[in-house]
Length: 348
Ligand SMILES: Nc1ncnc2c1ncn2[C@@H]1O[C@H](COP(=O)(O)OP(=O)(O)OP(=O)(O)O)[C@@H](O)[C@H]1O
Image 1: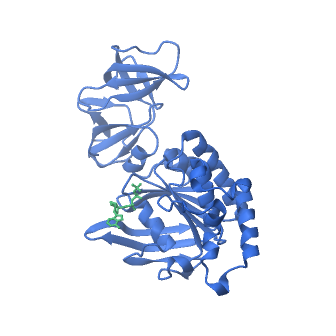
Image 2: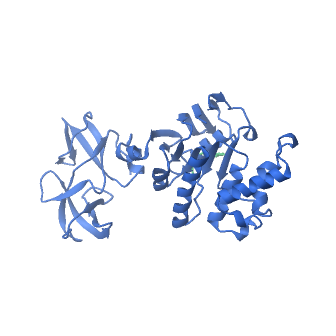
Image 3: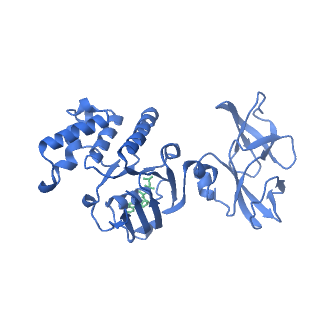
């Protein structure tokens, strides 16, 4: 089922939580909403679920406007962090909940509900634990029960808000791989909220990067990293160094140093130069940034150094290959080998 959001805006008093969001989610897609805290991810998910209503704009499922339908009539499954399991109910009763509360005419028989619950518990690999209470489960098991509960009503859209937030790294990794398989197998259209970029990049077909209630970029994981649409996206996704520079007559300067980087066709004026830690080399001198090494440590087969540049509040982070990396206290010169310029200077 496809989801179309058109012109969605939402204010809380005078605060704009979402400003004019347009988004097309393709049928069968696994989409990540990625952004810093407060960027509007949860609010957008709640509007799609019908737990919140937009001030303006429309939500459509397969072309049908559902903007005014309440949550119960939207046939979406959701796993929100705050929707914890019911403590006083067994795992099986938790999973059956959505079916048990249906109006009598829509409610399956007791036997049908039992069979469906057993099937769902098998699906989330908790077949033997139906009789337990939530307190008797691990965090990862609880999240799987929450998923089974969300899937019980047979949704075609699954919405997940930081579903793995509270879990340790190993469980998180296993669970997200498993979730991706489940999504594919069940033919769902899923949207999940995360502020963990690794999770978004690993799991999603496309990533929606949000900031301040706006969409900064919608792209496939690789492109969000390799072709960031804005300074914000460059900075937010992956590691980066940034440098306030001035462009004058096509030359890019940091202070009075001219750098050997292209001006990306930008007009004269202040700009911010970005480069990744692996996109720079140490050179003897020339059009480069003079710096003092303040830290050197091994990282994934290279040496990550931190280099202090006069006039920069943060050290540059550079990955250096080879057997003789610079040492703390060395004077070096750093030359970016690949970089991106964005026109607006960013505040630190
Ligand atoms: N019911 C509400 N009343 C007032 N302000 C709200 C309400 N819900 C959300 N907000 C505000 O709207 C903004 C967006 O919140 P939202 O929860 O959508 O962000 P988020 O990107 O999901 O953040 P997080 O990653 O921290 O969960 C925040 O500044 C939040 O304080």
